[in-house]
Image (cartoon, rainbow, N blue to C red; front, side):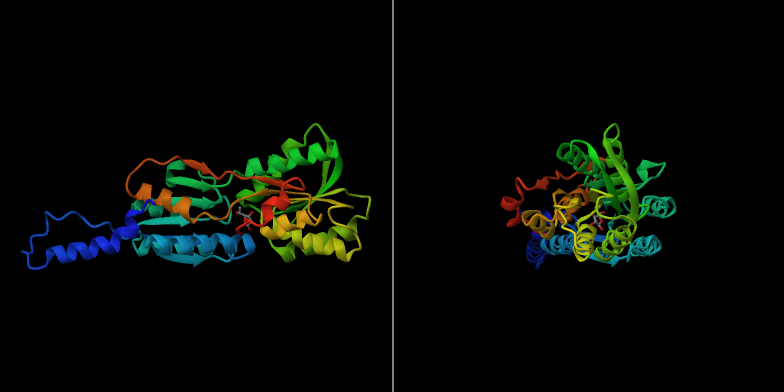
Length: 324
Ligand code: GYE
């Protein structure tokens, strides 16, 4: 098994201290001990099960690697994240990881980080900036591909015909923008149409409230498919659909993104038809990137997780091993 240098640190340090006993104070010839990394993580929020798994992964992996993690949770507010980043800069952390709430508004604080020579690594959600050198790299999922995978599945399983209600994620966020645009592009030229789109803010309650409003506006037979930008909203929508006396997965096709164990289980019992995975267990891959960036090594600008698709053909076999 490969042991990471950061894990070896305490052993190495003790070794160096022992080796130094009784010698002259001239330590210049001693090899430098691996320095413990201090990382500031500006987490987006705590909105749902996906985010809880994401946060847990960062905390557990920091512990494992001996990383000093400064964690801040922004409650879905960009201004809170910006304050967190400023505070990390003031504390002279070695690197800053941001899971940005929304795509815009990042230039000023990223310039402050650059001036302080602190590298910024984007995790999970991407941003729009004119100067791409304001961050070192992005590590996360390909949201455009996810939306397209769902759309391709829907086209295949409906013969390209049907009316869709869309549950949007947080307005202005990369996953909401990309999952909407890529899905809409992929159904162009078919007889599938999005008849209404409303945001449930990636939350279970949000999905339920939006679906209840949809069910007041549209009767059974007015729509065929619910496309949800994440599983939590889909699960909320399923509750609303059942409370209205309809059968999710049968009367209405339900398709979603994230791959929560609960959602894959809902496929097994026939309440969800298709889920595309978006892996939140990002701690190891993001810290790998951070360690390289801090060591001055080259990293790819964009790294994407491989994300699977689940439906009735494979959900049963997959559900037991879902880790989130
Ligand atoms: O799909 C959703 C969470 O940014 C990819 O945020 C993430 C999304 C994820 O609220 O469940």
